[in-house]
Image (cartoon, rainbow, N blue to C red; front, side, top):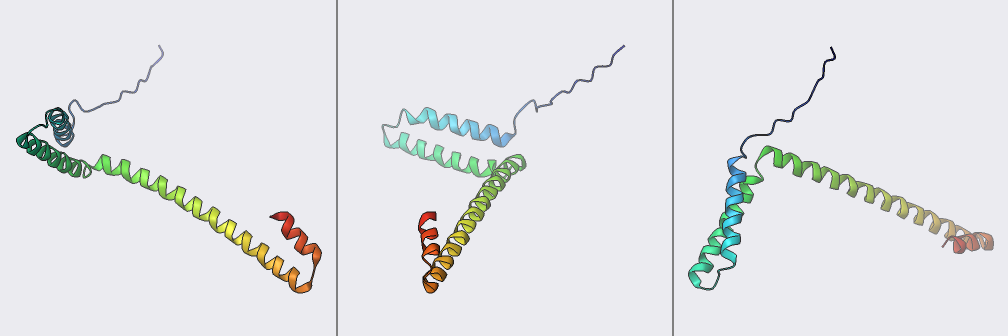
Length: 120
């Protein structure tokens, strides 16, 4: 008899209260956005926006949200480091070309000057 090992994902049966509060605030704000014709409905919409803003703040404090945000920040930081490294390499190469050109000009070396112009 062969044994079959299955893996199950266990998702929580209900979402975190903060996520539910955010969803509720977003739904209320969306429903009030169409009916913003009077001052009181405008105030209601502004209060809904305030509640949504506070919900986002609470949502960002959740550990799994912070992990997702930090992973994305790390990825972006690594891309930035790669770009900086490439820029540093290009600047170093340009400096070396300028040094070689200046040396060729001082020595009145036409071949070195032509090499620089060809590389440009």
